[in-house]
Image (cartoon, rainbow, N blue to C red; front, side, top):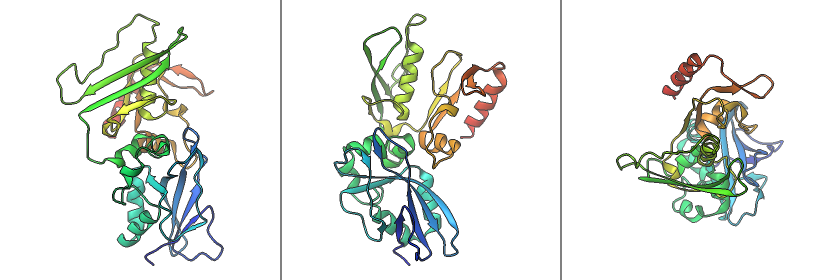
Length: 291
């Protein structure tokens, strides 16, 4: 069977095997609910998790992406989709024959297989705010391509200030120092650590609106190394994770984020400094070198 049916929500009671199933996630991207988990059911009925895919529509005004109950031909031309990690496409390819693989992605109107579709939807708000929000998805939009310059602009409110601070950082990968570095200087309590935390949130896709990033697709991972017990960076255990993903998978595949620092989550959900700094740092650096 080349054209496998894709059921949405629940499969029909008389559904034949093999088939695919899309289940909706409650994950919210700035008001957009585009996230689905895709499963493959083998002829034996065995269920295989493929991964997360996000599906949007042209001119979508927030809310859920509505889909038909069963997809057996390409969705309407207003639709477009994007798997959220490289593993999504790898898992799908391992389960299906080549013709089935291409047919499924074309029926879902995936921007990685339909020529010219990416250029048509790249400026859609739902695409930038939801489908390509995280670095894992960004890497799929322009695989293998890299911009020489990464420019990040964002606003944040610093402690003691009534006004927002507009920040603009620019990195040029081909120039000599200082082009590849940005330095921040200020007295204690000025808000340097808070500003850096907002910078990380902006790159990861976890910040509020108002973030502009040029060349973001060339960023492969965000690694934070902090020697302060007062830093405000995201702790991996405190980041909200979609119910369809494990924390480890989400952090490494979707967000592509690693934190090496002197804070850790306490048993009551708060924060506490690490009492023994060196061993945790060595363990973190060991894991990081293998990722």
